[in-house]
Length: 310
Image (cartoon, rainbow, N blue to C red; front, side):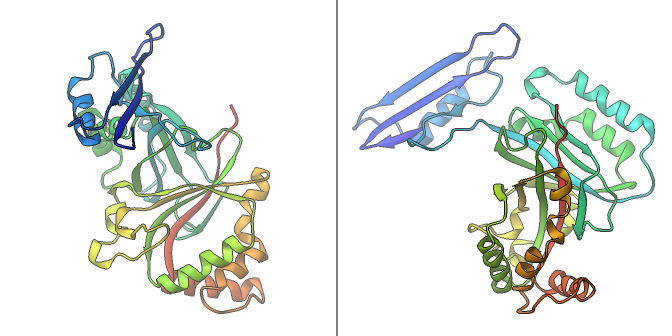
């Protein structure tokens, strides 16, 4: 949806459920002087959407040269504490819920398993990361809040497992098979100036590292205990405040093996120590400096993950 010289343009595609369903195409144009606004058009779309249009309307108007993406929903997170290994029926019953869920939810497992490496607040946590993709963020939220999922959660999770669980809206190709990613759940920034020095030093190194997503989330369960209130929040990156439950996903070049050791690079350690105004000497000293960084600069759970090849 775009407004140019007083003329309002809106292009959208409807994706009905069903293997043989036809795709619906919609074009709308309102000339100058019309009482249509972007907000009014969006409201009309949502209220008069045909019954077969089971997914949200996507906006495909874009500036020239800008890559277009369909936006999807993702339930992402890490296990922070667990009373013991999950019982076999936990996965089995979750699978049954997924199979019984309408196809319009577009549920796709991206990752359910250990990371390539764990760091900072995640270093001593159970080695389990989960990423599940949905047709839209609305569908992800609907699934999470559904009665059958909440019953499953109460049976297997509540009082037994602490999950830092967040729901984000991001491009459909956020995670690609066979690639490695920096997956960080931000808790809080304690010293914005020092954090800025770390981020600046990091990007000056020109690592093979591409920020794919850094944005807010709807956060639940253990995340509510670690994401700060608005009064205690601080700026992080790109104007984001830490009370919005920031999730960062960055692609790391190279093999899974090289990506797993990304944070072990001396160049990376030097960038992190820029936040403290200190130099790298030995790994033993660095471990103490890293503790200081987490206690005074930035609190986050970092996992380096690999998405299995299909």
